[in-house]
Length: 275
Image (tube, rainbow, N blue to C red):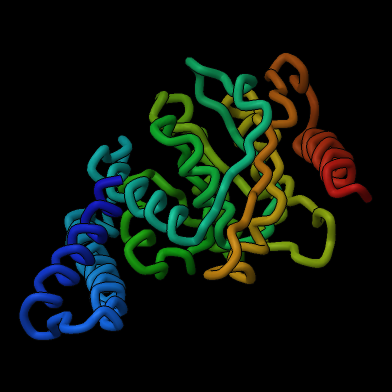
């Protein structure tokens, strides 16, 4: 909330000072002056916040392999996410939050609809620490991409099978060392036409080797955020469908686990979307 306070103070300061000095109110019909000045001040506040986040992310080393989540990186990441969520008018309607394991690391899998998927999940889980498996190109995302290493995010080169294998091994290590939970979008790419796309098996090997619970979740409407902004708010539905304990899938292949989770998510999405 302190970022919103910065915008408010910048807007209020410019509206008051400007109305008294360089653009004084002389007649009753000049009521628009403080409104214009407040709006300009608010935009200036956003600029100040952007620069603050930009400077803050410079203190996270993008070339370092962090073996512990940086509380500094997490603070600035979540602060930025909450600011974006507020200004993008994203309202999250969450169901099944009580199913999430409290005292153990888990692998959360979700369908992939939009670039906002990661942000919604990370923002909602707050300080639980979830490091996502992400494609290397996402390192180029302004500010957030610079913070990813400090959050123990794992970059995957989908064209390099050896590098992908090493990335999955690192994910297992982070879970076994109780560093962070892991987040994956098993479709591998955003799906805007299908209810849900085909799954890659690889991410489920992380859960199998870490013997970790699999949190099965779905997101609906994140693909509408960019279309609705700035005039319409977007209500995003975030469902925790089920938590599959290791004992429930022990001995199954990654393909079998993948198919099971895919069917659960597909049936749930069709039900939610009335298909």
